Length: 185
View 1 (tube, rainbow, N blue to C red):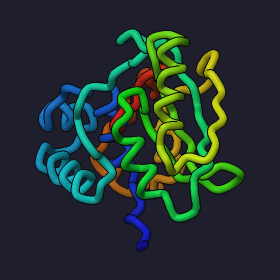
View 2: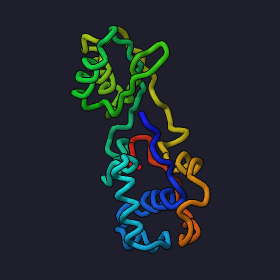
View 3: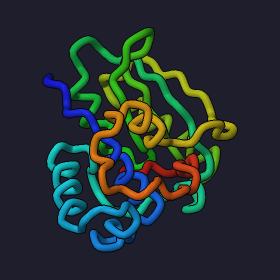
View 4: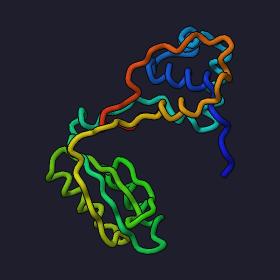
């Protein structure tokens, strides 16, 4: 897989402005960043086309939505059954995300439920897949570091690029979402 082009300071400023002002249009983003609206539109289009920006939907806090019990589940699956388990997992509403992994487990899942009893049902549903050989779960007690992306992209932004007309960065709120959400940014 070819490397994606590096983000520059303007890309990062636009991503930060979108995180801080998710409903802002191109004109407002141009005011915030201090660059022309056409530049903002072109950069956002490039970020969308390259897959960096994947959507503008609302971030949903599943805890606030009533699903405050969350757990991480490691699945060991039958050899060669990754597509089968993926298909089975996609049919479980309480599954928030799943990742193929290295190590002793094969798939790491993040799940949410309204109660411990509902969590138990999600765990039973996970184990119903014929591809699952064994599962191990741990319940999340609290979130120490919320999902975040801006510190990572800021750390790798091409220095000085895209800055000619930019205003100094606007102080932003914490680039984080609650335990129950998975932002697009």
